[in-house]
Amino acid sequence: MLSFDRLSGDSGCIELDFLEREATPESAMKLGIRLHLAGLSLSDTVLILE
Image (cartoon, rainbow, N blue to C red):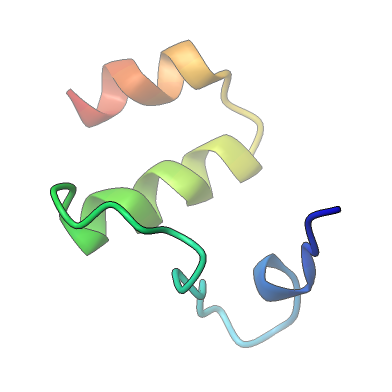
């Protein structure tokens, strides 16, 4: 089971150690995760990142 401890907390830092793709810029991954956690659907998140 996945642990979501890395995505919670007050540090404001998202740990990306569990992501293995290096083709996507780290800044885009962080923004995508933040948008999706903020409640945007996956398709809306993709549209914004495009």
